[in-house]
Image 1 (tube, protein in one colour):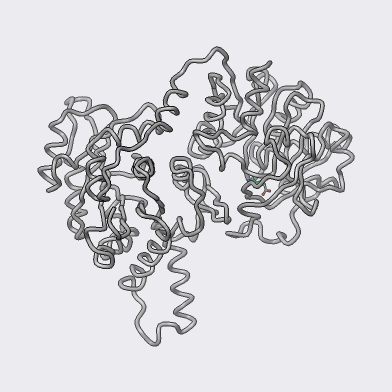
Image 2 (image 1 turned 135 degrees about the horizontal axis):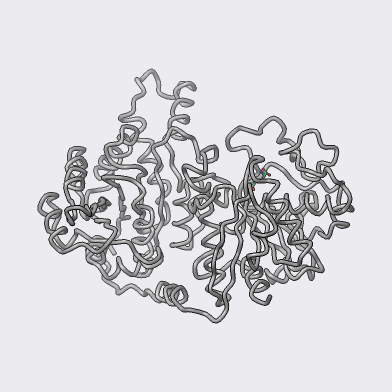
Length: 527
Ligand code: GLN
């Protein structure tokens, strides 16, 4: 590869949500497989400063980076595909850049000049891109939304200008469009994609590569037509129909014309080593002897994006433990023993707010009572502690998050968090160390007594009630190094009842299952 750093910009047309993030991450995976050092960044045109206060039902899970940034779920795709640990600088939102700009303006840093979207915001976007690209050979930038969205215009302008900053030959513009199939006329309709490409050109960007998303395979004529109308050569128009699973996309991309485009762009024609992805596909398609059904006790029912990292962590653990996994959604608002009976293990994920909490407590109580394997994540630990304390004699034990008046606040607000309940960026966020009790189930699962996991919480186990919690069947098996914060609890007599205040799902990888998820599936498959 040449000397200069290369930049790949991935934009979308027609509609959002057709897999721009997966496409960007998969292109990165193919470049990595060629031995290239890749970095990646998401730019979101929202006026939010970060994703922390966004409704997960609308936007999907809030992904937390090791340094505590609350980001879009696409960062999770990036981490899983590229096996990187990303940071603040990999998630850029308009709100963050604008609030910095306005703070600079108030501090008098512009020396009397007019502060404008162009060049000040567009300049700040370009600076943020260069900062995130630091240390890599190829930096991939995904622009959220679709080109033409009113709020995204500064980003489109910034990436256009960026070619002037670093040289057009160092920029590859990839536009992802959607081509619908109209059932009544049995035709793929390219018109919306053509319009989207025209619109992009109208903003001064002629794409180097067009990725055409369709539901089903489309005939060759579709690519031809799009090439003709977009001025992009036919071999750089790539058809990408729905894959069986997202981890197939790097293989599909490496097998498509995109590989040539990437080879030419990077000046590196090494054949990608795709074994990792082939192994994942094999693991995924192999039918195993044993079936395991995990009940996900959820308050956002059937909303996969809201629990995407948990679902992905379960899947990789299933491949690792060689079981056929079925995930059964259990509605936390209506959950009963009948639901819990019907699964081999229970998983209570993280969450905020009271809705569904009684059902989650009931799930933990059921698992303690019956010996059914249980994995609790964050709120899943807190409800387990409530269930145990109630079993241990404190009938009104609760979390202060849900019952301000309870005398037995077995889960209480962390010191310094009072009054910050609905404010952004104030939770305990990102990587924190935990020390595990020697010989505990958690330590055995990890094969270590010192672990680092990511966090996102405001409430915490109140160790004043440790006796009642133990009486109810749970012991504290891991704490922060100073012993002040409870990080892990478990039931010593139970086949597998482990809960953590952290979000281990965020560090699971498709080819490296997380030990706590492996632990719960192993226990479940033994039953
Ligand atoms: N709502 C709980 C807290 O703030 C749990 C958070 C979570 O599950 N991420 O502590």
